[in-house]
Structure formats: structure tokens, C-alpha cells
Picture: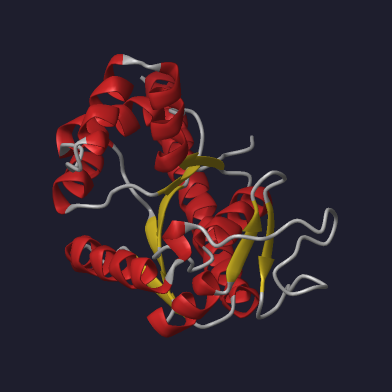
Length: 243
């Protein structure tokens, strides 16, 4: 008998922390489904669903989308993954969202990518884009052959508004203020595992080793639980046979 333990994790980290790269590696290495709240929001807004229209209205007016609306949307998506292990990215972002998730599912671990804000600022403000193709360059580690020009077309590169230094600083401060209480929520439950570093490729081996131990432990516990159930069934059968 093969016993599979459903493993459910949350990954947190500020924009530019390498969260997307690490999430991709986790889901591919460990066979987990990946649910990104940002992707779910975009799909609903594009499809003009009831929740999507409500969220677009809030965003257009510069308002935060209510916790109960976001929670209802994400928890609904997670219920479609009842039979799967998953990695949740971008949710929860507030304590009420974390409480809603906690009430609906058992979370095994919360991975927190702790990358110095100075490193993130350097990463994001060094990013330039060729808008027609979507090609991305970084003046620090992936510069264009000719400064300011796309390698393929020779057309000008631009810096997105989100990557302007003052905008990056605001986004990072907002992230810190919003998510610190969520990190404390999970720390108090003994679920938070923080990985600190400045390079994704150096953080990843530690994340991989931690999840390997965690998953193997979960499978062992699931097998032990199944063995105890089988032992209990066998014991009851023998008792009935003797009597």
C-alpha cells in the first residue's frame, strides 16, 4: 500500500525576493500544485466574474479588497484541490485572511524568504523591459549588449513604473507593515520557517533540504497512522473470530 500525505504550505516574501523562482522549483521538485493569488485575481478580473468586478472596482478606487472577499475567492480555489498537496503564494496577507485559511485547512509549514530590502531595491531598480516582446534585462547580471537597447530589435528599453526606485521603496515598506503581523501569527503556531540570503540559488538548497525532511516525516507519520488503523481492524477481527 502506498500512503501519500497531503502537504500544504504557504510561501511568503516581498516583491523581488525570488518567491516566483523558489515557488516554481518547489512545485516541480515535490509535485505540489501551485496556487498564486495574483493569478487567480487576474483571471477573475479578466473574466468579469462577480468577485472579479468587485475587486476591480476596489482597485480602481484605490481601496483594499475586503478580507472576506479575497478569502472567499482563494478558499474556493483551494477546495478544488482537496485531493492535492499545494503551495499557496500571495495569500494570506493579513491576519484575518490567515485565520480564515487556518479555519479551513491544516497548514504544514510557512516558508518565509527574508531578503534584505537593499538587495531587492538593487534587483528591481536595475530591471529594464522591451515592452513589445516582454524581454527583461537587468543591468547588474543580465545587461543588454548595447545599454538601453533591446538585443533583438535595437528598440529602446523602458523601466516600469513599479520598478522606479521611489515606487519600490514604497512597495517594500507597505509589504513590511502589512505582513509582519501575519509572520507573527504563524511564528506563534510554530509553523514559520525563515530562509535568509541575498541570492536565490544559495537560498534554494536550504529550502529543498527543509522540505525534503518535512515531507519524509509527513509520509512516515501517514504510514504509521495507516498501520495502526490496520492493526486495530485486524485485532477486532481476531477478537470476533475467537468469540
